[in-house]
Image (cartoon, rainbow, N blue to C red; front, side, top):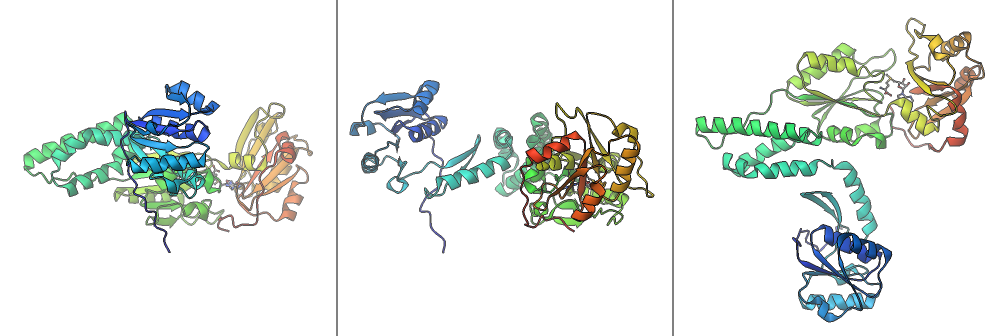
Length: 486
Ligand SMILES: C[S@@+](CC[C@H](N)C(=O)[O-])C[C@H]1O[C@@H](n2cnc3c(N)ncnc32)[C@H](O)[C@@H]1O
């Protein structure tokens, strides 16, 4: 059964209107701050003033009258917050306010009042309000925090831009349906994307040139229902999805994941991350497993071009960071030579993710001032690495794709002078609930790893910093499904 809220959500203009807050504690201070921020003239009546209230009043020149509440305080007041620590007094204020048709909020008894103050996500002029109808302010704050993290800060700038051109666009498209279509195309399209990326001048210039063109065409066609044509060419987002845990995605990655029409993803992108992609997007698995490439790199490049040329927004989602052992450079080279617009979103690379989640700092004042990232990929049964460069003191070496080549790697390092007692860690499925960390020395790692029966993907960290794992390991993986395809 659905509970009815019996609440009407509305935004009311309180600018320069008097809001009375009764009470001087931290709760009253929060209400006063909220009202002040919304532009109200806040008057506080209280016998005792808490530090929070005193600081707020000093900072914002809020009038605090230090005495007990008097019923005449309700005169000339636009709204009231009864937030004293006396429930009976709060209730009496609510009754009196309602008799005089003054909206009233009661801090410790929302039902006794006529309005509640929701949690606000402020992207002025856009405001998002979250309310649990007074049942659980903590829950609404938690939800607000999630929305806060998800809505880009530049949303407000986008709303301001739309506001500046609203009248001009109203003139250009006399029918509301055409106006709506125009705004939908632009706010969810190039103008919106430029603004959210922080290119506000470019966003405005794009909108202006579109408007100029549209006005010109409308004049020649004498047709006021003219609709500008959608751009023929789409765009590619090359996005790093991080090492596995969805919480490690960037805000931008998530935003682009939710607006792409087509998604090309590979094996290292976990199911948990794929669940965050827009529901009606077409998803294409392009594989990439050792010696079992579902699609060759050339075919992936060609697929990106094909979809973008059909006018689609294509998301190329890659594990970790696209520019670290991810062949992201090759993919955008193709796009660049084809003249297809693209953007690259960095992701947390496996080295950072695994190191953090294993409690192994990659650099440390006492142990390592250099950190090398190399690939241990086997080609014709050998590994093409500058071994001498890897065998240096005060250095951490991180090896991607090194599980199969681990016996060769450890032998070669020892043959080139690295001590057989050098600490080494192998991290399997780092950052996920299946994470396993195997710590050993260079001469014992192969044996230990084969006993542990670890699964790919794995990352190797070599150097003194590995000794810190024992003290700094904090992450406790559990047996829940990691979401990686096996
Ligand atoms: C083709 S590379 C891609 C690297 C990716 N672009 C990045 O920045 O992390 C794949 C290798 O990354 C490493 N890797 C990726 N995710 C990992 C994880 N969650 N745990 C351990 N190693 C991982 C493994 O060494 C794996 O073989």
